Length: 246
Ligand SMILES: NC(=O)c1ccc[n+]([C@@H]2O[C@H](COP(=O)([O-])OP(=O)(O)OC[C@H]3O[C@@H](n4cnc5c(N)ncnc54)[C@H](OP(=O)(O)O)[C@@H]3O)[C@@H](O)[C@H]2O)c1
Image (cartoon, rainbow, N blue to C red; front, side, top):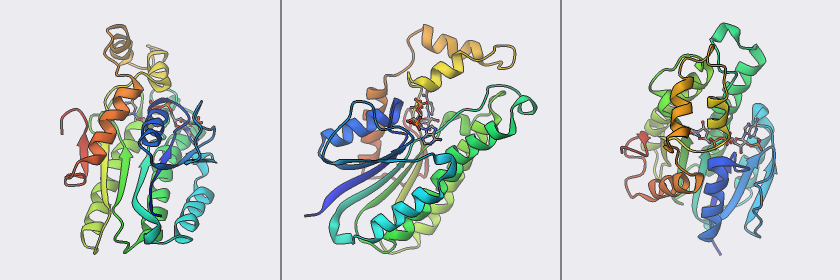
């Protein structure tokens, strides 16, 4: 029997957890990748792979071998959702510890790059519909002071999607890829933004206001919009998109 499998990073909480819950609810099989397991989710169709995406080599190899051990006949559809992301200390670049900066790039850009390479490499030429979603941000397109590593990682995801889309368009049965800004969502990441030192982070008032004025979307609502975007027949037509406007 062939199954629909999604691989979701950062599904332990926030947006990723809501995506995982909704994909499981519609009968999909799921591999979740993060340090902790998705809170309160259990299903015979859910496998959790515990991994620190700051060091993604081993888990990328595991994904490649897992998919290679099976064949296209085993899957009705395959989707990789690179959702995990982190923010370094919110402050001017020269005031942030180097390890903190490196972690943001490793989790936010290097890990998606390596997992996407493993996913595409293991399934190259398969006629199974294959999709890759990179969870980006408006901050990949519009710079913000005090968050240079995050802005750089998200801009990197956008251009990664553009380049891979060109490669896949040249393949028979190429995969479709989109780097998608998901909107503003009420998660731990927003808490981190509005808890930052306003002296070091000039946009602090904007994030405080988003919360105060009730403008943050719930993780469940944001996940539903993201999944509806993934389901669109024209998914991948534009490799860089915003769920709010495209
Ligand atoms: N929230 C927003 O308003 C907003 C806006 C634009 C874009 N985004 C993007 O949406 C995505 C999800 O954000 P969120 O708000 O849901 O974030 P969040 O609540 O902070 O959750 C982050 C997720 O990433 C995982 N993660 C972090 N570091 C990791 C590591 N070293 N190894 C493995 N997994 C790691 C966490 O799992 P563990 O801690 O268990 O490892 C967690 O599941 C991110 O890419 C973010 O940049 C969010």
